[in-house]
Image 1: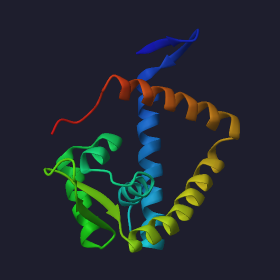
Image 2 (image 1 turned 90 degrees about the vertical axis):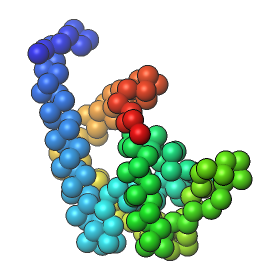
Image 3 (image 1 turned 180 degrees about the vertical axis):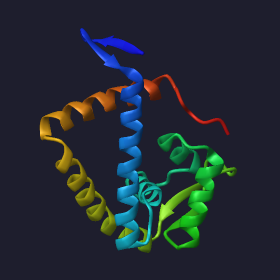
Length: 158
């Protein structure tokens, strides 16, 4: 099914397929490099980076940010906690939830892994695209994400 966008015809199913396959391949390539150098995978890195940049977050905050169910997010945090990278602290304003904090080991890990992540992502994208298309794609995806999040589209239940 084609759609008109800005006067141009766009193959929306093809666009979706390209978008999802690119995301999967980038994610897998980043997994490989992070696992090789730091013993973590991309989802763990993303959780750690979020917690570093958003101190005192809750599991629900992570779930909302990554559009993942709370149960799956809690299990991911449990794994990070077992490794000693994250600690759960009582939430003084809500006894039903905990506040999450990086441990010193978690902070060291995410800081080291961030360089690897950024370097590998730049390698992968630079090989395929020039700066101008990357800028346009980043802007378009940011706008799409904003609309999806604003309208709470695609949020998991439970």
